[in-house]
Image (cartoon, rainbow, N blue to C red):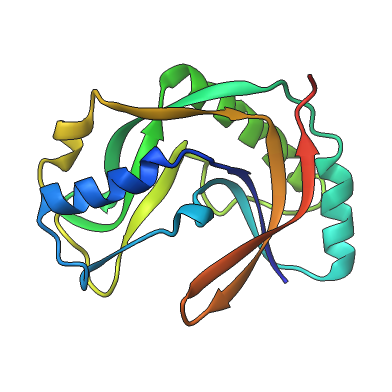
Length: 183
C-alpha cells in the first residue's frame, strides 16, 4: 500500500483560486490540471509502498507525536521547479504557521527515522493546487501578482496517515489513521 503522512485542508476558497490563477495566466485546461479540492493536503513525508507490518509500526510512532492546534494562513503562489518551466503550481503559508508546520513535519520525520524511513527531500510548507499535464508551463508574473495576498486560513488539529490509490482519473487518498492535536 502506498502511504504518506499529511495534514488535510478544508478551505474551499482555494478551489476558486485555482480557476482565477488559470485565467490570469491564460492557460488552456488541456495543459494544466487542477488538484481536486478533496485532495488538498500538505505532505509531511512520503513513505512509499509499505506492508501491513510497516503500517502498524508507523501508526505506533505517529501515536507518539504531540502537538497543539495552530493556524495557517494561505498566502503567496509559486512553482516547481521554476516559474518559467512549471510542473507544479503551489500556494504557500504565512511565516508563523509555516514554522509550526515545519516543526510538526520535523517531529514526524524524526519518528519515521526511528523506523528507518527517511524523507526524499526536506519539507517545504506548500500545497500543490495545479499540475502541468504533459509539458511544463510558464506562470509568468503570477507569483508577483499574488505575493501579498491571503486566501483564507485553516486550523491544523489533525495529522493523517493516508493511503494513495492511483487511478486513471487521478489519485484517491484515504485516511487510515489519525492523530489529533492535544487540546
